[in-house]
Image 1 (spheres, rainbow, N blue to C red):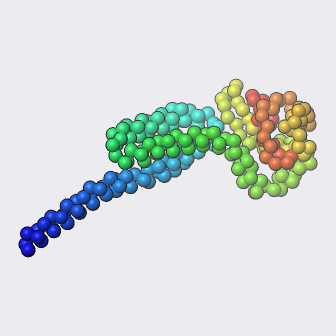
Image 2 (cartoon, rainbow, N blue to C red):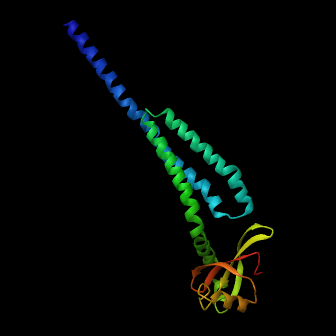
Length: 206
């Protein structure tokens, strides 16, 4: 009888040890399931200020500190994934690396294309009176943004164009004649009917 009890206890101990051994990889993998989310948040929050601002200081900070730091993090994640290649944790590490690079690249690609729209929506909400005041004449409403260095400056302006033809052939030259400027408009971006953001190179409108 005692021998039977001892055997039962041994079987139970082996069963518990087996469950621990089998569950340990799953628990180990679960410890890094949060890593891709942290990588995504860090990528977007750190890349957004650099993608938003075009100033020379921001550009110098980007190439001298931010990009080297991203490269070091990528190298660290690759080494870590290599060390953990036989562990379920390696998958979370590799996913985190891919997510981080994808979101950083996507932020730098997408944000410059949409930021003027977002900024104009916020500005127009608080300046409806100013918009109405410029609704019937071609004019420069305000300096919007500038970047570059002395002798290589780009200046962007929020402008009104009631005829809404500034982006059409001949529309830019007609608008410049109405505002009394001989500058060349490099790019123009329509915010809404009659309102544009125009950019000049080395030729301020104001």
